[in-house]
Amino acid sequence: MRINHITIPQDSFIRPGDDLALELDFENEGTIFMDDVTVTIISPELGIKKRIGPFDLDKNEDTTRTLLLEMPYYVEPGIYDLRITISNDKYRRVRHRPIVIT
Image 1 (spheres, rainbow, N blue to C red):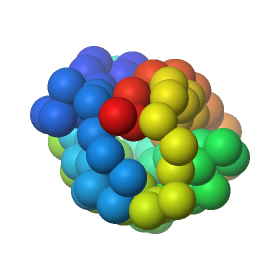
Image 2: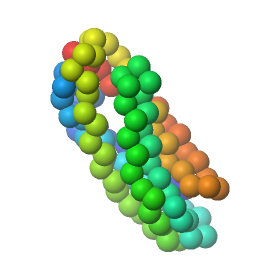
Image 3: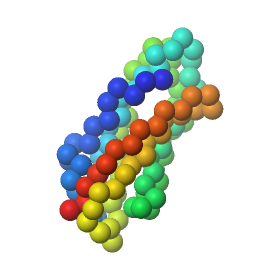
Image 4: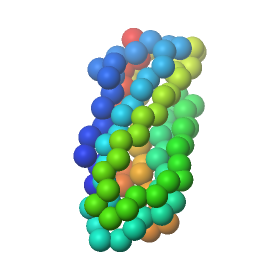
């Protein structure tokens, strides 16, 4: 599995209470069918956990998924880390992306 792009359209500068849309483009570049794939985004500092799936990916299938995260109103300005995991029971890819709360 390969993560091609992680796009944060708001240029990763957001305010408390805003919605943050993350667009993930990834593909099954292997030669086997991948079942029960999930995408999970976690930020313990922000108290955020969002999951989509499960869904299946055929061999060499490319897909794009969008997740909408609601930033809590109580968040203090600062830089926070989002942990993005795409996985199933056999494969796991993790990426980290910073976001700035202003």
